[in-house]
Each structure stands twice: as structure tokens, then as C-alpha cells.
Amino acid sequence: MNKFWVVCKQVIRKNIKSPTYIVLLLMPVLLLGFMVGVAAIKNHTSETPQIAIVSNNTTFRNALLKSNSKDYTIKRSVDTSKKAEKALSQETLDGYLTITLTGKQVRAVYKSRTNGNTLDTTSLKSSLNSLKMQQTATRLGLSPTQLTELFTPASFKTQSVSYSNGKEKTQKNNQQDINSLLAMVVTILIYIFMVSYASLIAQEVATEKGSRIMEILVSSVAPQVQFFAKVTGMFALILLQVIITAICGFLGMKYLSGNVQFLKDLDLSQIQPKILIILGLFFILGITLYTILAAGLGALVSRADQVSQAVSPLTMIGLVAYGASFVAMNSNTFLIKLGSFIPFVSQSIMPVRYAVGNASTADAIISLIILAVAIILVTWFTTRLYANHVLDYSDKKIWKRIFKRN
Image (cartoon, rainbow, N blue to C red; front, top):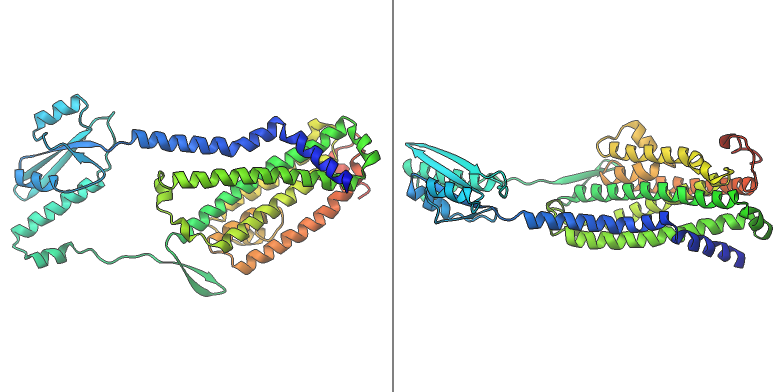
């Protein structure tokens, strides 16, 4: 057991100082800094537009001045086209609205500077249409009660439901969006971690083998002990990055949820513990499967420069699974259903199917069990592969050696 921990610690010490791992470790920090910077710049540059209102009808203009909106501020002193044009040219206004009343017709034109703050005219149009309807109602002699009835909107609400074994289950508003967002985040992280650490552990094994250090190690430490020690050391490095990524994700959500409109609209309190557990299990098992197999593939190469050749099929499978996860967002075909139960691709497809309501909890658990069984079988096979080929320096093609003596 002492030899096991010696090898494990050596893997951690060696890789934690490597440029590749440092870049992986800093990636979420740099991404967080970039996103916070973009949000800060956007908030700084997106100031409330200042506009003016000009009209040939004073009553109509005054009524519009009383309307409140957080989307713009009105400069009341600018009440003529001449003043508005001067203020626009001096860049003290971002734009001005000209309202012309001719008989029963109301015509409005908004003129803005190309280098001014952009105005979302939805609120302005709403206020203008409301005043136009009030004017029309007054001219038609409608009572205040009738006017209230006229302006009362139709009752409209949305309701999200999912079906499990043919039974309808009501979900809270935005629950689907939150689940889908979580599934896609987990799927992206699975792909990044799988590809990164599969290459890292294969490179670790291949470097020692290529430098002939492996011959010394094998003479004092059994190949099986080496294999599990290296995998354990790599998982310790993965755990460190998961912790840093989780901290960055928490800080990012805390800051960006108040500064990004898409996140403002999501009620994160609706996140269900059950879906977090299931997505977390797929994350852990998916990375475990790829990392263990990559360690064995690293033993097949004779030199470190052959690592990409050895792990490229594994990387391609991960890429296919990653692409299929996006298809699963809007499709539930037979191939997608089948793929969600097949190891090596299920870790990306099933979380999305489960999140969007196309798979039940039972389906997700079955997929997890199959994935766990696959890990056991792959571990058994890869341990033998590592032991048989860790000192194999044959010039034969890598994939011709994979079943040799296994």
C-alpha cells in the first residue's frame, strides 16, 4: 500500500506543475473573469437613453411626459424640433420622438443618433398606443367603466408539464429551461474533462514508458498497483479542478444572475436536488470510464508522440456523444433513445433526455447501472492491457496489439 501512495503522489506532483494542467486549472477562472468583464462593460456602456418628445398637440405631449419608464428618461425642456435637433447634434440627446396629430390620425417618428445609447422602443410604443386608445375612447364618449373594460387584457398563463409512465406531472414555470441549462452545462463539462484528462493520463503513462523509467518502476511496483495509483492520482487532480470550477460557477452565477437578462429570468430556487444528483453521477461515471480506458491506451504506445494516435478514437467517440446531446435537446428518435443506454455516449445523451422530460428517473437509473457495469468491465480489461503492454516496445501498429495476450 505504501508503494501505491508513492506512485499516486508522484503523479500528482508531476502533473500539478505541468503547463497543460495549469492551463486546465485556470480555464474556469479566466472564463469567469472574461464573462464578468463583458457584463461589467455592457452595464457601463448601456446607460439609460435620454430622449425628448416633440408634438403639435400640447395635451398629448404632456400626457406622454407623465408616463414612467425605466427604459428611457425624457428631457422636458426640449419641446421643439429645433431644440431637439440642436441637442442631438451636440450629443446631449440620444434621440427624440416627433408626434403629429392630424384629425383622428396619430403619426410618430423616432430619430436617433447612430453613436447614442440604443432605445428599446417597445415601452414607448406601448405608452403611445395607450394614449391613442384613451383619446379615441374619450371622443367616442365611453365611460370610465367602459374604458377600464377596454384596457383590461385577457388572462394568459403558461403551464409546463412532463410525462412519466403516461402520467402527467406539473412543473413550475421555467423548470424546463433550468433543467435544460443544467444538463447542457454538465454535458459540456463532461466533454471537456473527458478529452483533457484522457489525454493527460495517457501522456503520463506514455512519457514514462518512452523514457524507459517504466522498466525501473515495474521492477519494484507491480503493474496493477501502478495502474490504480496513477488513476487515483489523476482523479485527485480532477477533484481539484472540479472544486475550482464549482467555486467559479457559484461566484459567476451570483454576479451574473443580477447582470445578465437571461439569468435574471430564471428562478434558480427551482433547481431540483434529484436532477443535480443524477447529472452529477453521470459526470463522475462518464469521466471515470474515459480516464480508466485512456490509461490503458497509453500503455500501448512506444513513444509519447504516439499518444494522440492512441486516444483519438476515444476522443472521436466523446465528440460524437457531445454532438448527439444537442440533437437530444429537440429530438427523441430511436437512435437517441438507444444511445442514452450505451456506455461511452450515454453519459452525454441521457442527462439531456432526462432534463427535457424525454426519459424517466427509472430510465436514468438503468443507464447509470449499465454505465457502472461498463466501468467494472473496462477496468478489468484495461488493467490486463496495462500489465501486458507496459513493457511492450513493439513496432506493430497500436490497434493490432490491443488484443495481444489479453
